[in-house]
Every structure is written in structure tokens, then in C-alpha cells.
Image 1: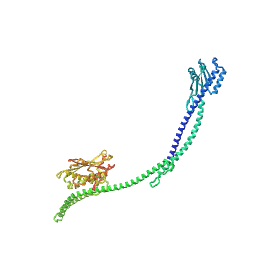
Image 2: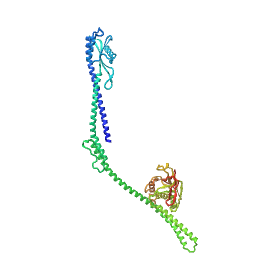
Image 3: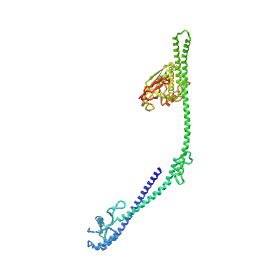
Length: 537
């Protein structure tokens, strides 16, 4: 369809160009022919007017007006032989004598030309009347006006009028022949020209297009044209070179993609190892305090077991000792369970859970840690929607890093310093969400009254291995890992701090939208079932 449409367009344009060119040539030819014929008619008219003037001077009886009928007949014969349409004679007394006038000849206009020649004694060529030429309206008569002299004195004036209709008729007849010639030429030239254009250009282009559609990378010969295709051979060579370069670039691109996939897999493995290493470092720090905390309940349980060995104790005391021993065992179980929850590997579970319940579990366990003994943990839950659908273990790791950093910041103020860490939550409207998406967000603020972070370090705290702690007390990976985790779950982590006043670390999480019929049931990381708060509208 494309080749046929192109052939049709070329044929039509070629025919139009040929038509315009030939019509232009025809117009120039006919105008030139008309001008030459009229010049020839003027030359003939001047010669005839000279002969008529001699005849009039020789035979006219000027004292007898009008002339005798014999003279009129002789003048009429002379006009017919000369091909003139009419003759108008005016003497010095303004008497007018006309010969051979017909109804269409403008006698008054011709008489006016005659009187001008009589008055100034000069011959002139004039045109008058209007008739259709061969393309448009043109003059109908050629008028030769001249004075009539006898013995050097102007005795009269005369005008000869020649009709130009014969010239126009001859041109129109020639025009019909030219139109036929133009039509035949256009048909022949369009056929021959279209055939040559199709053969020289369209057929090679069609072969190139077909070859491009059937191209396969394993083809050795891509585009081929014949030697007579001229410039298309250069186009074919250029296309061949282009496709070879594209094929080579594809090979390089495949190799680059494979290399990037390998590097990406290695990067993911390294990232997992970094997160695991940071988690183990945090667990190691917690283990020292937990070992001390477990020792006290074990000693108490041992004491109650010794008391139970005595025979003289009553049944009521035995039951009381057993209940107290059970409470201490449950306390040990709680401490161990909290440690396991903190060190549990991430399984990628994204079931909805209550963030408030997660924070409460962590606060309950961390209150038993020695490094938190000088810090008062306080929770201020103002958020109505706290259900998040992401990996709870990763979020626990982020919260643990932020709490440990807050404890270190308070400790940096001195061993006697009493600190406070407030964990506050609030919901951010969709328009205030940092990602700009139309969904509700949960902001968790970790506010401590520690030593704060200097302004020049604030922009670098999320960089890997950047730390302001003393050697051996920090790896510089805690905040970097936390920032990385928050980005991976679609949240954000940002910091605000003033030296000597404290630091506010803010975690922003997308919350689960409110269901249409009922509230979602969220499970806390410890297995309890908690009802999520309502999501914001």
C-alpha cells in the first residue's frame, strides 16, 4: 500500500509539473505569435495607407463632394484588395466620407483619429474596439491614421481600419492543436517519467524496506542493491554499517547488563551482610545486660526450690512458693523472648501489624537493660492510624538503633546525667506526606535530651562508617543501615538536632488504608492480636 501510494503521488505531481510547464510555454508562444502577427499587420497597414493616399490624391475631385459613384466603387475595390475593413476621409472643412463601414466598426472613434492626423499632420497607429482574443478580451481593430498632402499642403486626413479577428481566429485554431499536443505529451512523458522513477528509485527503496522488515541479527548480508542504483548503493552501505554497529552495541549492552546484574546481586548480598552484622552488634550489646538480668530471677527460683524441699512448710506456703517461682521463670522467658525477637532474622513478612504494639514490646524489654538505667522511656501515642504492612523485624532493627543512639547521646553528657527519651507518634495528612502520594502516613519521633549533633555532622550521619563515637564504641553503620531499611520499605528517616539540647529522629511510614467494612486485625511481633486504630480518611 505504501509503494502504491507513493507511485500515485509521484505520477500526479509529475503530471502537474508537466502541465504547468507546457501551459507556460504555450502562453509565451501564443503571446509572442500574436505580437509578431500584429506587427506584421501594422507594417501591411502602413504600406496600404501609402498606396491609398496616392490613389486619393490622383483621382479625388476635391471640389466635388461627395465623390462620384465611380470613385467610390474604385476605393471599395482597393480596400477589399488591401484587406482593410473601412476607410474614413475628412477634409479641411471637417466633412466626413466613409467607405466600407459595417455596424461593428466604431466610425466616430476612427473619425476622431482622422481629425487628429489632419490637425497635427502626423501619422499614427491606434487600436480600438473590444473582442475575445484567444485567452482574454483584446482590441478588435487596428487603425492607421495619416494626413493627405497635395503639393506639401495637408488637404485632408484619412484612417484605415483593419480587423484583428482573423489573427485571433488563427491563434485559436493553433491553440486547439497545441492543447492536443500538450495532452499527448503529458500522457507520454508521465508514463515514461513515472516508469523511470519507479525503476530507478522506488524499486530499490522497496527492496531496502523489505530487507529491513526481514532483517535478522544472524544475517551476513544485510542490505543489497544493484550497481545501477547509484546513490542508493551508498545508502545501502551506510545502513549496513549502521546495523553492524547496532549489533555490536547490542552485544556490549548484553555484557554490560549481565555485569550489572552480577554487581547488583553482590550488592544485595553485601547489604544483607551489613544489616546482619549491625543487628548482631546490637544483640551483643543487649546480651551483656540480659545475662545480668537473668541471673537474679534464677537465684530467686533456686531459693524457692530449696524452700520447697523442706518438709515442715504448709500446703499454702508450698503453693505460694511455686507461684512465685513460676513468675520468675516467666520473667526469664519474657527477657529471652524479647532478645530473640530483637535478633530474629528478617523473613520478609509484610503482614499488617500495630506499630504502637511493637514500640510497647521494645520499651518493656529495654527498660531491663543496664544502659537504659539512667534514661526514662516515655511513650506518647497520638496517632489514630498505626497499622503498617511491612517487615516488622526490619522496623524493630531501626527502632533499636535509634534508641541505642539516644542512650549513647545521653551518656555522653556525663555518668550522672539523667536523660529522657520520648517516643511520640502522629498521623500526617496525605498532603503533607513526604513522598507526595495521596495516602496517610505515620510519623514516629524519637526525642532525646542528649548532647546533640553538631551542624557540620548532621548531613553525614547517614553515611556508612561515619561516627562521632570513640573508637571501639561504634561501627558507623547503625544509622546508615536504618536509612537503607526505611528507603527499601518506602518510608523516610530524617534528623533534627541542636548541640546541648538533644536530637529528634523522625521515622515516616505509610499506613494501611482504612477498610470499607471493618478495622483490620493486626498482629504484634510477640503474637498478640491487636486491633489497629482507624486510618485517617
